[in-house]
Length: 118
Ligand SMILES: [Zn+2]
Image (cartoon, rainbow, N blue to C red; front, side, top):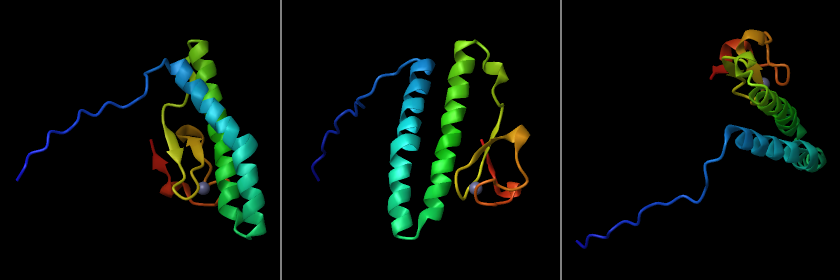
């Protein structure tokens, strides 16, 4: 058997600052909320399968607010004001500050006992 020498894996990305990474996340979620999900919803309504896209759209809006809050806290040197732990709905991705969870997911109705803590 011939032994092949493996190439060294060199990922092409650069490590940026936390503020730059949060801004990139904000830019990505802003695109999703402003452009991507509205188009998905239009298509999904035409095919009568819009419920999961509505959840994803609402979750994207919530993630955008989380990223904006994190960047604002970072810029004010107030990271200690951010949630310590998050809870994520396993059905739709809705994300809560663990200390401020609803009894059921506000988007899809899944009980908080099913949420994933991160
Ligand atoms: Zn949910």
